[in-house]
Picture 1 (cartoon, rainbow, N blue to C red):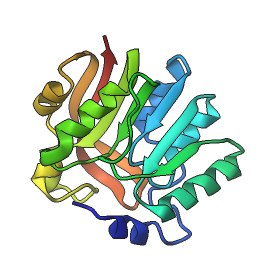
Picture 2 (picture 1 turned 45 degrees about the vertical axis):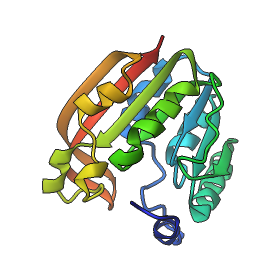
Picture 3 (picture 1 turned 90 degrees about the vertical axis):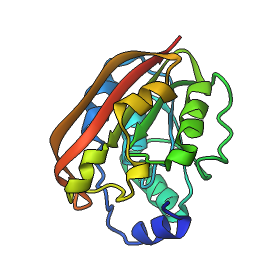
Length: 200
């Protein structure tokens, strides 16, 4: 699993290693949803959180990387928006019950030993009717060089995600091959899964 030191080193330079523009799947979906409180776990340098804030969402985010937070706050200031950003690992975050209208998991990969726990914590913090949006690399990504973990136990299959989120209604799901162009670390042909789910 990736450590705090790994991410602090990756985010240490002035350059935004995943860019300043939001994830394309999030960009396509978020403007069409009713604004509210949104949580971004493992948010890194803040590109997605800042995008949501620019649309009028009340944004909450966390990451274990201090250097990621610094860059996220700098990006928010650059875009003249406000975000709430905490330093926390994914198991230590409080996930207060029924507080969020939406949770966005964008390339947030967890080892299978903790994945279900993390995903169910995300469900718990959603209000009834809340939305969970997810994009992640699938095991087929191992044949490509466009990013993602090289440990198959950190990659996502739709069948496993359906079990993790079994109490939610699936509004959209897809496993696909696409072309990423989000940054040097997410560039080229990729195998991904996408989900949009609604809490009962």
